Image (cartoon, rainbow, N blue to C red; front, top):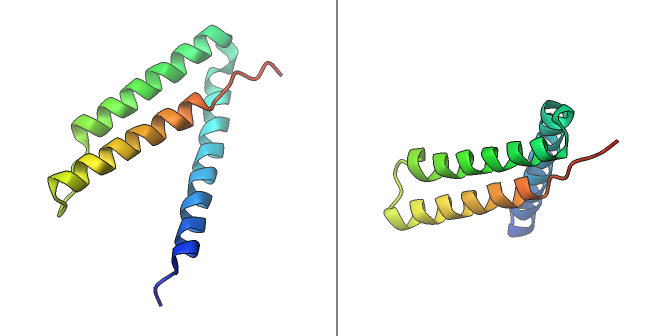
Length: 91
């Protein structure tokens, strides 16, 4: 049975939330001790490296160029949105 559109959207949203929360905890724990400026520098470095990797290294087998470009653009936007949502928690 093929899942309906609402179910696919719920799965996709759930996956994104789960990944975001895992990354938030990992990044907070890894980079919290250096202070807010260092934290922001690390986040920016991770964002730039991830986007660069998506654009230069991602190869989607069996897809046309348009699909590959679209997926790379969406993945890059997701990286930027995700990482810019992280804030330095002073607690």
